[in-house]
Length: 314
Image (cartoon, rainbow, N blue to C red; front, side):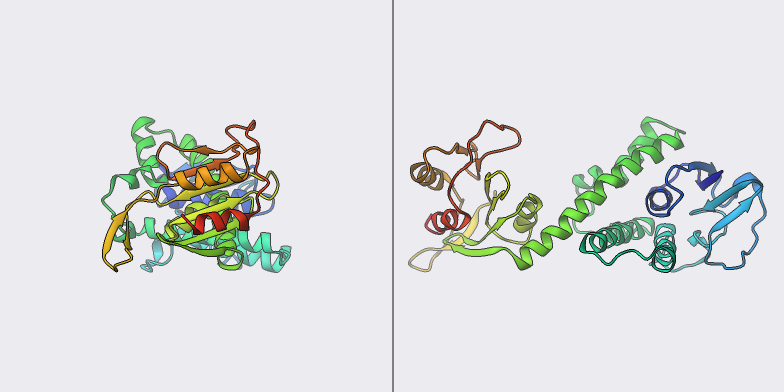
């Protein structure tokens, strides 16, 4: 039997290590996860240096065992003071070595994006494991309690001593986070390579023809005040404006603060393409034509460039 061993009351580092092994080490997809007191080993076995210290797989009785974040082996980082290393980073390094040498991962964009996404996840886990989140921007803000770290801490209060539950829950979350990171990396490439930039009196805008909706949120975080996305498959359009007041210069070069209002855009697009279904959110910052929330909406026939021309004139 193959078994992953982590410490009791597993933290994000231990669970991420188990997740990496289960998701990316061939033959270890459906293995059991077992728990020992921190620093101890499976069945109180004696630690023996393997033929290669880089190989974390041990034979203990009839079982193949990998210790992670405990047990003194290659995936236990507690023998080093290096704050750039944790069990998850050691686990990822091992998996990359195995994949590159034995399994020869194909050099495709999708595979590269996935490995980049996993690497970025692990970098966050390293920071958390060494308490570097105290240096994150707005580190005392309430929204950090919605992070996976905060949720895991809350679960341990809500469901004490349920280690298997913590692992199962966080593994599902990490699967979802991996998809979100892959979308983000894809969106970063779309913004850099395919975004159609334009100017409005409020500031910079950018438009896309892509199925990846993440470009909207990420573009806004990057400072674009208006973002438009047209879905090339369904023809749907989403236009979003920044929710904050913006500093703009008037004709007399005097600075003033104003809010973007998409009402004029809404009216203009309805006039140009009256057969399409247009929905202006009550906040006047979001204009939709088609949505997975309302499949009855009729998509516009206007091109992305035609919509951008309207936005340039608001």
